[in-house]
Image 1 (cartoon, rainbow, N blue to C red):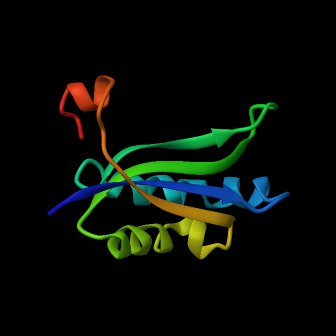
Image 2: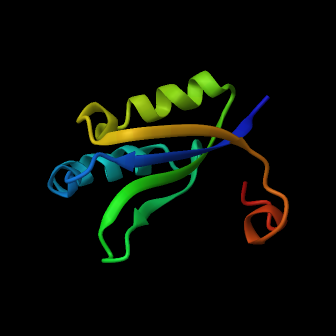
Length: 102
C-alpha cells in the first residue's frame, strides 16, 4: 500500500554555495523520480529570497523507503542538510486532493 510523505529538509547555515553547486544534480534526481515518486517539490525561501531548504511530497510504501529516497538525494550526499523530517501525510482539501493529483 502506498502512502504519502512530506519531506522537510533544512540547509546547514551558510551553505548556499554548496546548494547552488549541487543543485543541477538534485533537480535531475527529483525529475528522474517524477511523477512516480515525487508529487510536488520546491525550495524553502528566506526573507531575502534565498533557498534555505527543500520540501517534497512523495509517495512511498514505507517511511523507511521515504527516508532512503531523501538519503540518496544529491543534497543529502553532499552534506547540505542540517535537519531532515519525514512525516506521513494525507491529502484532504485543496487542488491536489480534490483533483486526484496525489
